[in-house]
Amino acid sequence: MYEIKTLNSIAQQGLDQLAENGLVLNVNSENPDGLLVRSAKLHDWEFGDRLAAIARAGVGTDNVPVARCTESGIAVFNSAGANAEAVKELAICALLLASRDIVGGIRWAEGLHSDNVAAEVEKGKSAFVGPEINGKTLGIIGLGSIGALVANAATHLGMNVWGYDPYMSVDSAWRLRAVVQHARDLDTIYRQADYLLVQVTSTPETRGMINAAAIAKMKPGVRIINIARGELVDNDAIRAALSVGKVARYVTDFPCNALQGVPGVVSIPHLGASTPESEEKCAVMAAQELADYLINGNTKNSVNLPDVWLARNGVQRLCVIHRNVPKMLNRILDLVSGENINVEHMINKARGDVAYTVLDLSQRLSDETREHIAGMQEVMRVRLLDAAE
Image 1 (cartoon, rainbow, N blue to C red):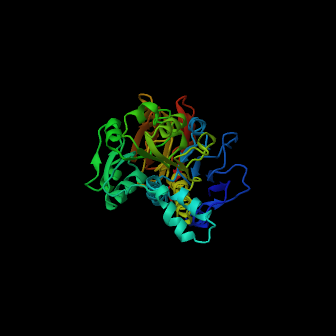
Image 2 (cartoon, helix red, strand yellow):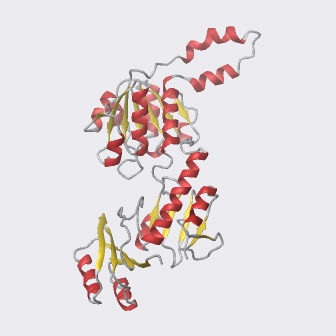
């Protein structure tokens, strides 16, 4: 029986999913098999020897020491795509906020206290005029679950859409409407876009990607939307571009000191996934990921292990997380065959420096062989999973 510890308030649907999969919730466990978290910071946590997986009910894993988990053979999961509908809706809202000074107009209207407010409105409303999005071009950088949904929605609103994503998955490609145009480089997006949506993950390569050099390639009066991660955009460059009209408006879901009170900035208080539906979907997905990994060894939506899924076929499943070095698979197979055990089914995949091998065995592996595999210098974790009775 696997114990799961939660460190945040988790939607009840997610907790129910744990129980449905036979996992036991124990918030007081000192050495759980899995952690289910939202925003709890784990960088200073000492992980117990039983901990095999951490699942975050959300997308970003900045609060999880992913590299340390990998070295310890701990699988880390996120809920990629579960909040996509919620973020898509906010992106559409941000498009409209980027066009018209709706926020400024509301603040102004609420401050009117004359005897004839209606007349004051008619006299002052021209200060908040902005263009329609219909017929304009939206450039999207990043066509994952969210980017693809926004692209399709924007075409239904009459926008011309260009998308750029050199790492687009087959699933995302299938979801895109045929009218979405494919840009082969970022410069094409910068040249075409009246509105620019940045929807990529934060990595050393993407941080600060919207900088002075990138903005210089854009149309005058471009409107930039960032509801992915604040650090994707260089705040100094945005302030400078807004001051001269190169950027007409910047809408961000990540308020910060550097942009407080800057004319042309619309700051949303990190509402991207803040819907009851999104929280429920993220919790359910995270619970399902924990169950599928702990019980079956599958790693769908892992952020630090290869994406592996294998239907069960055998008496016992051997799961090995190891370094991606030559001959590791052969060494493991030699040890298994040395016990006259057949491999009924197998998969071996790599992700950078890390590899993951899953073998379905015709009979149970001996403790001696398991310890031999676990003792290899290149191995981070070995797990043996018996088939359900």
